[in-house]
Image (cartoon, rainbow, N blue to C red; front, side, top):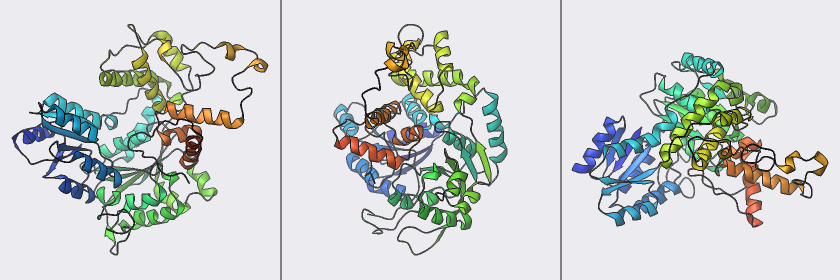
Length: 455
């Protein structure tokens, strides 16, 4: 985990840095906001920024957002200055760390940043077979295409492979090709020079340069525009990139991992994906099984998420009741591990008593036809000709309800919702724009997935 500290290295901040390094973080330090922005633009990279509360945190957060540098910010300062802590949180800091530093608090903040990528939880032979293949190819320099349905853990496995590779001491940089507008993705990947386009206020190093020496993960690469695919192919073949607005080619040394939830061979046949790029990426294919294909992983994953969200919300980590396990085992899990995680998050918040009972389990697709405890409602039990849930509604109404229910289930994440619905992210955004214009409330996007204009 890479920690960037924006503060003079005084005694207390120095102590915080030593604690972070003792917990495994790689720490760098600059004296002010401008120095921090310059370091991030130059490709130094950070998984977390800790900034002294005396600085203009609002300016830092605004600059990061406008320049699309996605990194969480925490503030630090004298513990007794409550007003400063409140200002920092209102300015956009995710957390406030009082000084003198508390080792357990710093460890918790670091764990919150790194936890998602540190474990691949499995017990089922199907997943074990996939990981054996990952272990075999991880030390190589070959490009790997990781395939599987949405929510199967493709990015988690990519990080697992990076940790087992010869590049593990260098950074792994991830780019979600589906979450970044097409007109900005080129700059995100290759960087840009100052003045290259409106909003290019300074030179910015792209993800290829930031990942130099390490691994670049192209997440959901099937969503990339054909024009940009051509430039990506050159970069992969020649290991040379050109910044937007630049005049000098730049050499890079990276390994490429890519993920997709689509059938890229079908996309090639349909002209949506370049065949030469497909073969360049597809040196090795690693397919991850859907959750329904790895049933023995269901309970250990559920237990993991229960513990995670119980700790995060300060509530007891209740075990699953036997009848709850049966209910989970009977669900198809179209959203795979991600759907299970969201379900367990809700269950932790809704549970009462000594166990998590079926009434705390709200499953997607069950909101209208099934009661919270898994029992069919009167509407679902009625003969098909007597159902009233859909009768009288237009197709547009049913489509709108399905889209908004799925988006709510994904906690506002547009990319995940589009994958579950089987539509493109562009189509989803166009639909949401229409609903907003019609006055229908739409869940806001998740952090790091800023809304963009529909096309």
